[in-house]
Image 1 (cartoon, rainbow, N blue to C red):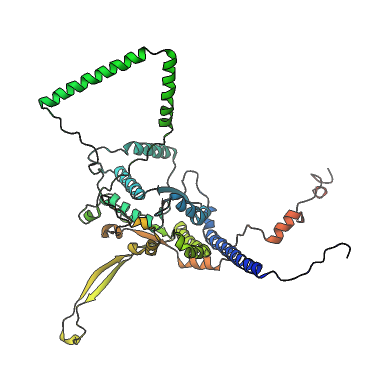
Image 2 (cartoon, one colour):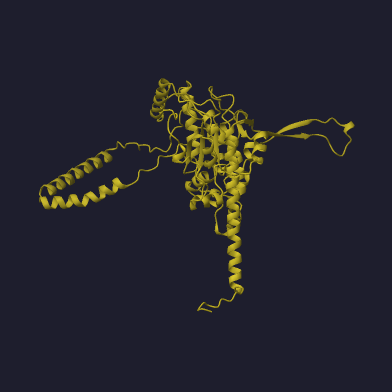
Length: 461
């Protein structure tokens, strides 16, 4: 037939059918999840997009929140940053939010950063430490910036300020830093790690040994100077060239990270500590976002299941972030109270005096994202000899004076119903047929032609 090959349509072999069915089903599951994930994010972006359209005076700063990120146990900070950029940032950008970030590369960095931020606020409000601290220079710079803004007439936003915490591990450090900042002192604890100078020995044998050592050092220095004076210029250049690589290596070395500040107050001293006089009656509200992070080769099936169901994580995260951006509803954290009765169930109630004794249960803050601790790496639970107290392994301690002042964002019923009615489509996005017509140049030109403009003026002119 005109040299054309004779194609015979037949089913693929058994191996090809298995391969195509497995790869096709997995690819379909990935595309399905990605499609619904984008729609879920777009639904919450549409809910807060009207805030970005509101005019902002030139003398007022946008609403700003504080974001707390920390490296998950057994991993680096990059995982937390990628999670923030993928699930949290799109909703914040849609609501035209501004934010500051407190990051923690090591365990305890978020705790130290938040506590130091609160101590700076207390010093600005008039509390004075007994001795000078290292953070006074940075505070002077911040005060200078604030003075410049005041002279120009720039004001802070009147909106509700809040905190956004990513993950259970960061939430533990956040609560610890909150208690340390408002209950702890302004002065750092005494540093016991500094090396103490040993006592000087004033015995006659020690003085003789010191004299002999001084004479030996002086003779060695004289011989070194004599040797260098007797060298030729070529030898001096050679020695200089040998010494320069070591100096260059020292210059190229990265500076060491500053030591982490120890806690100013232990958890056992919370009940007896004095609350700061500048503590507000209500602390800024906060919201805690889930951060599922599972490592290990044996957990591959669970990780694949989570990878194929990221649309649910995007929906839950978008709901919490939208509640923070809208800030229309704020509620207090609950303190669960349990009651115990002294009645004997074996006897009739008419023959015994019963009393009901209230027992303080767990705070709601303690139960937030508690299921994430099961996914933490085993290095978070290891105990080493001589190590300080670890926040991740210790129990979360809530002081009633701080716990009653804490609040959290909540989504109102009207906003929830409005989000459910939204189909999650971008109103500015074009459909497939519209994009094809645009690429092919088939779009109808609605602009006015040149001969349709007419002449300027009237016909009589």
